[in-house]
Image: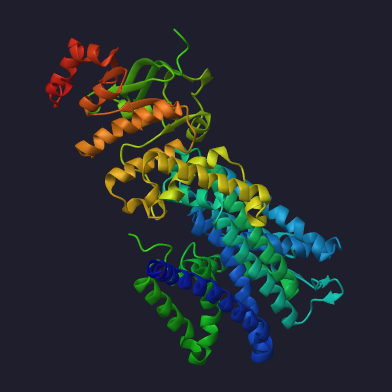
Length: 325
Length: 262
């Protein structure tokens, strides 16, 4: 009996810890979803629009995180895929009169093809070339959009109609807020599932040691391309919903600084860590808004804040995957 | 004589005009433990890198189980059945021992992004299999207890074993070990000899090793080849090699101690 009690006591500690971790996690998630659902009613329309933008950034940052955080590829032109998604939807709905939901697979396909065309040749080279090529690609997409009649030149496309979903007209800021809640949640689930998979591990293997990964039978070019194209598709989906949300798109939305902002969200929270990247996206969008009372100094203060974070937590705000050094 | 598992003929390799390997020919019969020895800088690791596709020899033929390996990328060669370890430990940092070994199963499995995102039944089965194989390989080399630790925090000798387990997880027919005894103490070396023999005997894997510890080489291998200045200067049983005047000359002519052979 005494020994039974000891065994029980030994088991109870970790077991209780496990249960509370499990239950605690579910409670935290439930509270988070409740807060997300209630936010538009509590905070009003202006805040809802800002939060929608933050959620768009969460989607984009999670997409870029697959490329930068998981596969370790520096992409400086991620906004190009965001643009590809937005313009594909804009052109097909306006010029071809297609239903938004039918243009969505087209946006995904165009982004995937663009990803293969840009990544295919470049990913054979080592590391830094990709940064240069993606930087160029980002600018090419934006400048092309600025100069082609089909993309509406500098003034862009406007009058993109808001979609219907089974009799629900997605029209108000609150409607779009919920749509982006779903998108951000989906992006987080997709990221989590990818990271815990054969492909997700392969990204880490290649990132940590390309030669050892090759020696283990991993095709580094193919694995990197998979990351690049996955990121491209997520970016394009974000862009597609961005287009119908605003109803109008123009080249400045897809500038180099947009690419940098998304990259900043990924690095700030902690590359490769899903909660960290979400936090980073929130900070990048909400930070300047919360500092609005500082007037013209707000971006200066925000920049100093970012510098301090990088100085004191160079690997991002969210704690790392392991404590080992 | 049966067709050898690995056959190299007339391999030549040079970097920027410097000849690293010159007309190297040699063969490994299936089921053998073969060794490649030679003074520092003789070109042993370069030869490994030619076999595994990391270097492109400018001349010669490499065939493995009847398949031409030249022009194949390293990952294709691994898929064809040749696994390797590295002279300097090359474990994936920040990943656990088990995750490291799971990398070996990559080329034996198929699930991609769609399978992972949708958590298809086939993908889940495959993940189970990857874990099971990785665990079995870890148990085989004797470090299963440490599977959840970060691999690079393990003691040196155990990291070497994890590297071997990782190579075994690719299900090779031929295992190339690049200085597996480097940095090991006497007891660990004896265990390594046992491990090498059990890999060959229990898993039917042919082994080719590069090693500086000639004592270990003489004890574990059935065939020994000697490389010096990029040329194959001798080949034979350990006993023949120990008494070969060219080999003694090669070792005397270098910084290393000729007594090491005896």
